[in-house]
Length: 599
Image 1 (cartoon, rainbow, N blue to C red):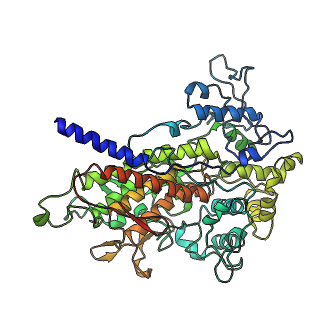
Image 2 (cartoon, rainbow, N blue to C red):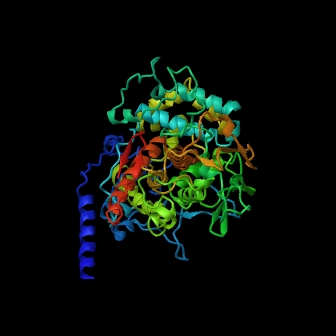
Image 3 (cartoon, rainbow, N blue to C red):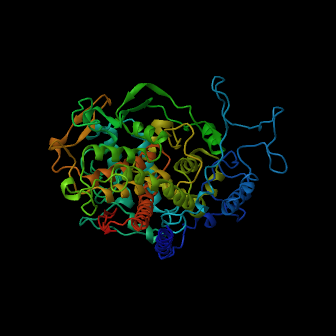
């Protein structure tokens, strides 16, 4: 056993050397945190995440020093420092602690009036500020991967991103099955095509940029040509990785079931949406959130939530469950999902379909050739644990980006700034002149302002939110869902033959939900080519990540840059895990940009 101990130590050392040999990174933010100043020359933090800190009646920080103390505590990671931060609306004692009731709970001064049956909310704390400071013994260190700066508050890119988020909120109840003939979707397509950031010239080349951050040019997307042609239906509100724009909007992995527990099991069909978990089963149908019920379009409720009001669990539902039929259904899915569940389900579906593994993996030939089957290594238990194992590493890395680097404000808070520009005290205009271009764009020919006026009331440009609590209590960039999505699907694309056409019993697989979500409809005959494992895995990652945009809690760049971050984490984990196996094998991994890498 001493020889085994020595070899085990050497393999661990080799894995550590692989990790240490990765090029060091430098973390850059967009500079808004120090660039934006108030009338006294102090940083205003108006483009940064301030939710749960005390805000004034205009939605700005009561005291900018609260923010600096919050940042200091994030840097230290010491729980004692977190306990010293002012949280919520107050009132506060001179030392910054709450004023307490005789019962020993904090007094909280909320702006809105809440029904007695529900009661006043409590206060929310921030979520996992210190996760990016933890270490890990497998995969890239949380601080050894990075993301480019997010769009600045006065950039054309952010104007386009916020326009997209507004339109997504206004299209939240439009059934996917009806998009081809839906007039509201048509309005959104025409409006988005008019945005400067999405324009191309007649030869489909970028028209140029005057944004301060040149690095953001790499993120520009083809959504229209010279502002006159509506965004093509297969591109609107979709991602950009290979396969995402092919076939139905929703990935098959969010709709179909698998084929039961043995070859003769007739209890399951793909279109029943039941995924067998051994002898148990789980249903792909979701709870039905009440259509047309949005939140935080009233300033007093919005302000309370920015001050940390804990209004979670107060959304409205109809009776029953259905297949994901509308963007609101997708938002409900990502409201309560166990963060990696869509990818664990996808793995079970692929195993049930007997999808072929990557050609570089062992034990894939007939038993009479290999004399060995995969199980503990290179079999079902291996991939089912591997696809979830990467998730916690992804969360640590993205938490570092969120709290320690970028601290980007959420879309709901940016919409609050727009509300104040339209309806607030005239002095508010002087506090954020950088948003003048965004306001002018939305009030102009792209008609977002008109659509918001019709939905919320004149000049009420608050963002209709799918959840009563709005966003989570952590910054917007990067996105936890999107980072986990990029990491998990990269593992699955490495394991399975990513070019395999999605088929069952020789027939192509392509379903979409009925408009009412009551059933799945086979649409395979309408496709010009079969859906592939790679495309549908990329699509399920985008569906989940962009599902958060449908809820109003993220922007487009939160999705794509976080997907890339997760991809790098997964590749690093695979590099290190490969060192632990004695078999000669390889993974060929397709990447977000259409290239591939072999491990």
